Image (cartoon, rainbow, N blue to C red; front, side):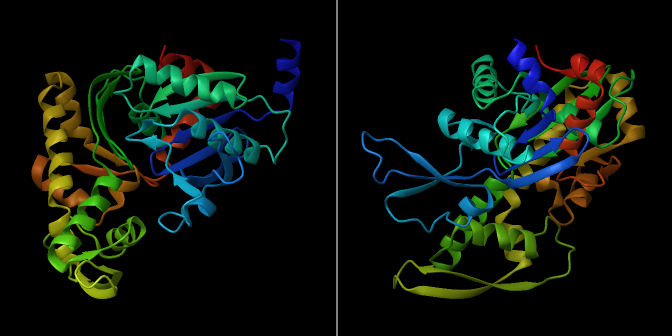
Amino acid sequence: MLLDAIAGWFSHDLAIDLGTANTLVYSRGKGLVCSEPSVVAVTTKNEGRGGQRVLAVGHAAKEMLGRTPGSINAIRPIKDGVIADFEITEAMLRYFIQRAHNRRTLARPRIVICVPPCITSVEKRAVRESALSAGAREVFLIEEPMAAAIGAGLDVTAPTGNMVVDIGGGTTDVAVISLSGIVTSRSIRTGGDKMDEAIINYVKRKYNMLIGERTAENAKMTIGTASTETKASTMEIKGRDLVAGIPKVVVTTSDEIREALVEPIHSVVETVHLTLEKTPPELAADIVDRGIMLVGGGSLLRDLDQVLRQETKLPILRSEDPYTAVVHGAGKALDNISLLREVALG
């Protein structure tokens, strides 16, 4: 206990948005200190007995995705918003904690971790144990839509309804929040990753060409759109010809990318509709006045807000920085311990 207390003096408390695609770390008193892909590269070379050694984490590991020899694996340990690989997640958390503390090993911070609202008790325990094994002194879990609402500047403690749509890498979480709690919520395992997958499948069908995840993500971010009214643009994409087996280049258009994204966008819109159907009438009246808040990296898809406005006939707002809203909300909760205890999961 005494050692923990001493280690606490050397530590900055941290808020971590442990995302499927990216992990963001907020340090109390410093702000956002780290934003890196949730990718770990491990090698089985010279380890014996099937052991694995971590080679790289974050940006360096993402560069290796789809480009590794047989002895190296680039792994994404978070699948659909929850831990799929316990040991690799622990190694990744340890890296981010030490990075936030400038590689000091005598750091035992209090950590707030953002989790999807659909998380099971087994998954909660896995997140807690990973963080404790990685060096946390105390672990709080906060639901991502709640953290997003706090980060977007909404008053979550007031008796009024706030609706948040958080489109992440692995999941889309839609929640109605009032009085420091989630009144109704829905989560679907559709997010940025499913959009990338849809683009890969579309290119495979239309052009008989196989492209990688990073190429699909780049096309989505550069010319991707959700609306038919967006001005058309084009870009070159490179991959492997599935017939001839040689490298190939094709020019794709924003209309084609929009066509590829129809299904994942429809899933998001349908989830918003289903959540609104389950919302109590008094809170639904608040949402008519206050609108729906969009957060998460996936919400940056061009004209997605327009499509949601047309489909729901409600005002759609996008937070100032959708990408970091969740981690900043967790950071604000970390700064206000009474709010944290109110909104944290048991």
